[in-house]
Amino acid sequence: MRIGTCGWGRLPARQLGISDYSSLLEAYSRLFDAVEVNSTFYRIPRENTAKRWRSTVPDDFAFTVKMYRGITHERCFVGVDDLLESFLRVVRALNAPIILIQTPRSFRQTAEHVQKVLDFLSILPSDIEYALELRGWTYDERFSNWIWVVDPFAEMPPEQDVYYFRLHGSPPGERMYRYRYSDTDLQWLKEFVSTLSGDVWIFFNNIWMYEDALRFKEMMSNG
Image 1: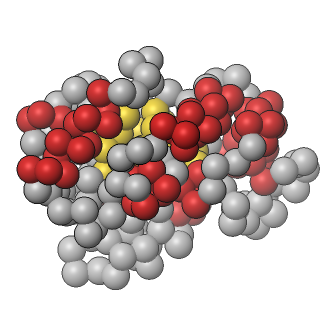
Image 2: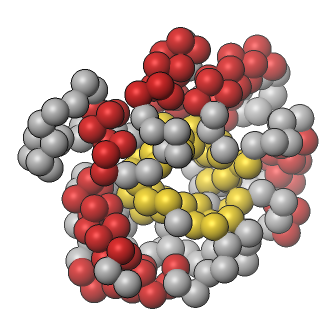
């Protein structure tokens, strides 16, 4: 199991007791063994920047990378060869095993859109896993070869070999991103993931994400 957060840019390193570090990413890698790179959604970084990130962390640290919005949101998976080439260079530099593909909420689950996503997935490199956060969509068996992303507090995943959870701080009735998970919540999550037989990746994505992820990591380590 991998536990981390969506991004590291706001890590309160000193408040978390880390004072000797050369970068926030280095400080982050002392706490967690994986991170979801969110900045790549807004801008594709230079390949050398990605190589620097990779060199900053231990060899067994894992990056997952959120796909650039120019591909998913602006061009909606069509005519993206130039952007995809640049994006994949960054993924390779990070040696990232998983790419997160998120769709905009306006990209409805129509027959045309389903086919667009399937056609796009068919051209992607086969040595990388793809985690699909198709927002507002219900599970479709045609996507069974890829990872179906959910927030387990809101939706149960299908049975998979790899599970990828993004925790947005939004249990039913709570405001998205602003909720701080209780010990009861995290205990439920611990018990739930213990029933899963596949690999599990858990990324917290709320304003308390560092503290919540550390609490959950400690809870898991205590057996």
